[in-house]
Length: 293
Image (cartoon, rainbow, N blue to C red; front, side, top):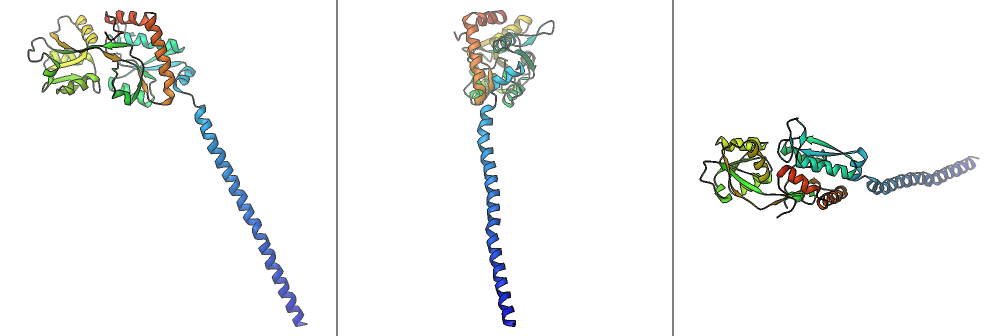
């Protein structure tokens, strides 16, 4: 009898172990299903990412959706951008900025700031575009996307009326000058060997030359001419000038800004062809500077 009971217990233990072994694959299948679901979700998320990128609106679409073009400008550099006797923001860049906004079918919103903050604000996306007599250069083109030139700016070398030491740009070597920081004029002056003191406005620049705090300054011919019209007794003289340099509108680099620049170029070309660009240049410069010659 004892032998029979022992045999039965052994059989029951064997069956129990077999049953446990049979259940183990079920647990593995459950784990496999969870992994498959997780993998499927990850694949779905990955497949959605390109669709989201493709669906993102470029800068032009964003501007048209918000209904305004945000334009960076100084508001203190006549005749490009300044305040008239009624404190209204006017100037060549203001009028062309409005012309561009109108061509895009939106309002122009001008954000006035100092020169140093203009380009950094464009880079960060704070501003859509800069309308402030920005000179084109190959170095700047590494950091910004530029429109076609809309005017060409001649650069002049200005000294005090009684200065006989500086007659050419080469004479700047070892001398002192003043300009806005990060401007092409400051860069040009430094390349000629002068030490540059940085200020924010043209008025400050020319005042430093008049007061003898610096030897000279390099600046836009049209801006210096405008200053001399307002201050005919200023003891200043132009001793040298360079050929016209292209002035253009910068926006930030990126694939999403190409359509905006293409539209800006289209609007500028239409204004060039129908004479509006030359008319604005004559109004503020007294010269048609829309061509390099």
